[in-house]
Amino acid sequence: MAHRKSGKQFFENFASKASKAVGSPYAFVSALSLVVAWAICGPFFDFSETWQLVINTGTTIITFLMVFLIQKSQNKDSLAIQLKLNELVASNNESSNRLVDIESMTEEEMMIVQKYYHKLSELSDKEEPIKTSHSIEEAHEDHKEKYTSVPKKPAVRKPTVKKPAAQKTVTAKKTPASRMPKGK
Image (cartoon, rainbow, N blue to C red; front, side):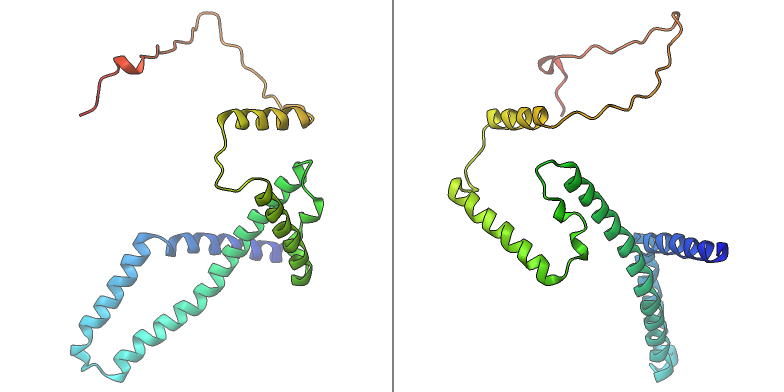
């Protein structure tokens, strides 16, 4: 069983590193250089079928293998995004908990939920069009309402380290913007 875990872990690490590496500018320049070198070699091989077969076979094999590596990375990224969204939905008192794990619903079930949100959007547009600007005061009121309606969770505090009395913290004075030197 431990062998399987290490194999999965190895593939996950390899897929992650390989995806990052092939997405880099260096990988692109390397691939471009390889294609240019192949094209330059064309006249020396009389543009033969073997010469063409080399690039076709090489790119096909690389593409085939990259599909699996990229898919693995996308699956991991997608799962991370879903978990973050689930946390946001679950932590909001006004959100429907039905949306947590919505990705496991059938397409038909998702269409029902989509109709609900489409209707909600239509009702919202009737109340106030999206083009209506919002004031700063509204933002403050919305924030205050949300802040006071949600029960506070106990804060996790890190232990504080007391500084010896001999050490003092020096803070820089802020210069008013009108007295700051202007850039050229």
